[in-house]
Length: 515
Ligand code: NAD
Image (cartoon, rainbow, N blue to C red):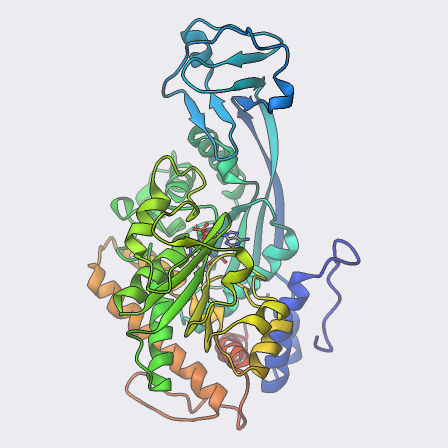
């Protein structure tokens, strides 16, 4: 913690403050480069912290009864209703639209029903209004409009969004795209809602968000729990009724390619990570083909990274997600595993239950021997204890903040290399920038062009960071690190932050930018 910082209020005494923790690297790098005190003050807290609420109406739910609760209903006559108005959820509940209950012969006793076409008894949980908490933190805009994802997850807090928004400021600077940093979302588990309900939630959320965002103000994108469909709802709600609505398409990135999204955006984060990994293998003079990797998180980032790495000849030996872990030392067929996750009856969208690999415990996952481990789920996955057990040479961070500061020390002691998140997963925001330009110019670039630009951008910035870390000033065809090195070696995570701060600092120094 640097001398100028004020303590950020923690939610409880024991709870670790994620934001303060995330700023440790910032302060270390700021000290190293002698960042001017005013710039430090402007960067060490977010520009704006927005909190707001959205209310929405939910349909009734059918809640399965536990065996112990079924007494008294043995003779309940089955009700014959079925159809598209029933939506089974991952937690066993079924959303039921009112028209379904009106459609067939319904036999209700004390609010309970037995269904003719599905086993078991259900309690009808009446729908009604819920209130959800929404957030948007705008950290810094020295380099351009605020930019950052929307996360729909049960465990989000203002503290977490502050940390993630600041990370976006560093990441957009490292990717050298003309944006600042932001992050936001809703505290909820999107899997608990039907599609129509989710759409209504997003529309209300966007209604509240509208005054805060805009193509040149703040540009959201997908993150955990959101996707292209959510971005499409946001786009519609933002542009509805606007006469020049096509001019506003760039208000959000990560859209479906058919409505202005960029080719290559969906896999861009995983692809960018794979480019960094490729360079790590090049530098180590080891072949990536035949190397083994494990991946935690098989959502957007994890599955794309796994697909691209196996395309380069690497073997995916284990995959872990929130509901299971699968292992095959001979290599998992990533495409088949993806098909398993996407099966309509796989309501948890989990790798659990995949028949062609061995199920192992969550704990054993971290001890699998491989060349590299790709954390691509949530923050804090690699604790000091996990770091002690890892049997890999490289941790390539696809997720945001997967490695705790204590784990970082363990990895350094054990000589396990790290590709830090702020360069490792910068591919997403880089192609988001390409999407934004294409929207502004009313253009559509082919995927090969997007990927080629991404590869140049990621690898050039990756080399800059490696040079800063190794104190190796040099100029090559794709990069020039002479103005960035510090005259001494620094950890690679600090090196990445040095690059970010140098680029942000220029706006304060040369333009005299001030908040
Ligand atoms: P996603 O929602 O598509 O997938 C998340 C995955 O993590 C799922 O497979 C889920 O099962 C798994 N997971 C959740 N909790 C877990 C747990 N406790 N243990 C193991 N696995 C768990 O999300 P995503 O978009 O792939 O994002 C993953 C990470 O990458 C996040 O940290 C996100 O901030 C970061 N990121 C995403 C993008 C992007 O473009 N989507 C860009 C940069 C960074």
